[in-house]
Image (cartoon, rainbow, N blue to C red; front, side, top):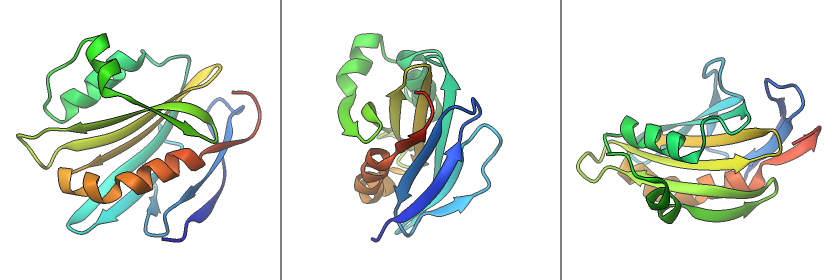
Length: 156
């Protein structure tokens, strides 16, 4: 898939201007006010919902956010060390980020791919809510998208 270059999007803090390259098949949607951008992510038997959000500070921390996502797909919470063991460190143009692949094996309709970027004064989240079949089909595009996110200007 040939990526589409996305124009700069300014976050709510008006300092963080980001750009990225998305897969051609992803369709930008209106999302809601909390999101910098939303995409429908098509796969062979459905459509996933991808959101990019940013919040000041640590936004509750990794453990709270991952456990909230786990709850959203019907999984029990994990402690901090279990969450750390389940994360993958990735490198992108915006710097290092934590990648999580959350799948509810008992409910294949519930899965999430997520990335957490710890910036200087804020936290950037990329989250794809999808089913387990969709995860297998879209994981590489999700990682490529996350790696492409970069700062146009302003402070981290």
